[in-house]
Image 1: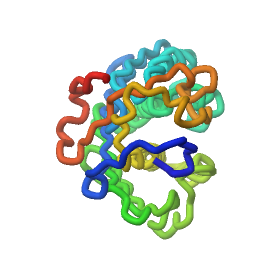
Image 2 (image 1 turned 90 degrees about the horizontal axis):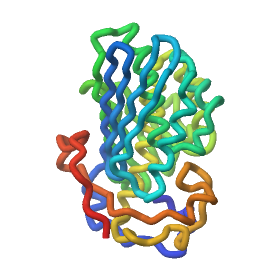
Image 3 (image 1 turned 180 degrees about the vertical axis):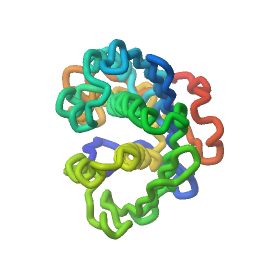
Amino acid sequence: MAKDIPFKFYPPSNPDFGSGCYRRRLRLIAQDGLLTGELEDCNHAFKVSIEHDENLITAVFGEAIRHPLSTCPGALSKLQSFVGLRLDNSIADFFQTINARQNCTHLYDLTLSTIGHYQRVLSEPELAQVIIDITIPDAVDGKSDASYQLNGKEILRWSIKNWKIEAPGELQGKPLRRGFIGWVSEHYADNYDLLEAALQTQKGHLVSVAREYDMNALAGTQPGKLYDATGVCHAHQPDIFHQAVQLNTQRDFTDTPEQLLRFIPEIPDL
């Protein structure tokens, strides 16, 4: 968790930080008229189903299984903004049409990945089902590596320090915060798989920094009393944030990647 978040006090440190890694796994499946997506990482577990007529999105259903704040499931209704939009819209088109900040960041990104999977399967039918893995070892002195694998094959690797890419060389100095969407959409405009990999890896890095803290120690507290809402997602909108309660849902998959997407029941709330 970045120190620039204005906490009035910080949660306890994670005693295992420095010896583990962040893991995120997605499963995307394309069937006739139906696309499904599943995502799980240390703090989140979501599912989405998208019905379509091969041109337009006709229905969207989401499921919030594990999430850090009690108000996160309220973002499920926001998915209806996708209904009626074209399947072949670009990622930039969706960002321009639907306000990502009014949505759950990770459910929104999962929905985009699931929709984009349709275009992947049109050109590569053998990839009707894919497994995506993002792995980010705990940062040392602000530096870590991030890798993205598609069905076990690595297609992207970044070396990152203090929210900027250090390697590969052609991306040196590129930011992972403000300005990210602009440069990444341009750089990977002609390669959907790499654009998808970049977007998911950036979000993985964003979540990975939470491993530095024991967020479960805050379970039952109201985060609105710990820091100010920033409006970065549905649950952090000022009119919603004051209602939120922190949940006991942080898990560590460092040594158990096989448990990802099994959606093992969360630890009971305190």
